Image (cartoon, rainbow, N blue to C red; front, top):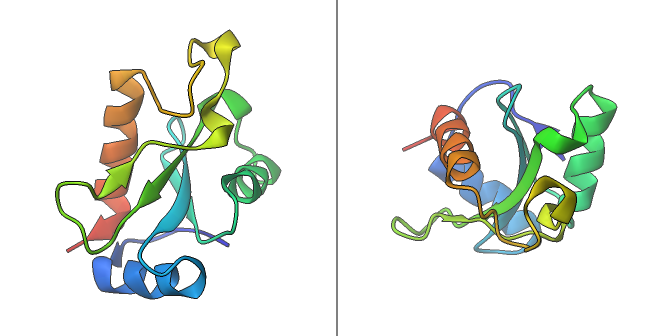
Length: 112
């Protein structure tokens, strides 16, 4: 598990993905602090890592990245996203503003 401190390439992301799932890597973004944690078996593990480093639960959203894909690079799906009390009763990130923030964070940390 790692909280990215500098951008990495898609090739590097692909190497991380190969560690556990092969073609996919689990990620959690802190949409307020603009942080990205990657590389764990569970989104909940990345969530815990960010919480231990000062993030707030309400700011954390889980998703998957597929390094070889272009159109379906980000999959906004994670069990940690189920939070009715925050207007998200689904595993999917339903709020478009939150999706946009996640995409911007991914763009900040994952380069071609």
